[in-house]
Image (cartoon, rainbow, N blue to C red; front, side, top):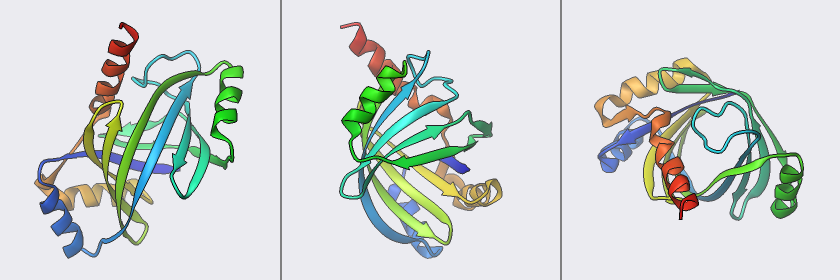
Length: 176
């Protein structure tokens, strides 16, 4: 089960200072390429189940089934099933042969901070459009909500609408 929340922030340095002061440790940077596939959907808006093909450069490649999510005030809970793969291009062809459509692709760099079983990440998307957000992943909703509360006005919960910019860019590209 995945428990996560996306966040907006205006002062990255203030958030970093808070993380350091509260026992979070910088772990690493990750460069990620994600491709999202679904059946019967052309955008990510309100899609319930999807497949994500992820390449974390220098680390791994995997396919993830993300089942329908439950949204509790911006904190998402959903089942995720991951399998390692060695050939992303062949996996794309398998998904297409099963009737899936490529919904979107994005590239991001993530700055990962850890404390116990909680991960805080700054995410900088560069494709399809530049977008900077943060994410908290935790072992349960209570821990995630507690961290949001402790961060206070340094962050704001970003609902699904933060990603509508990706759908708008996709729609504009298709109309060209």
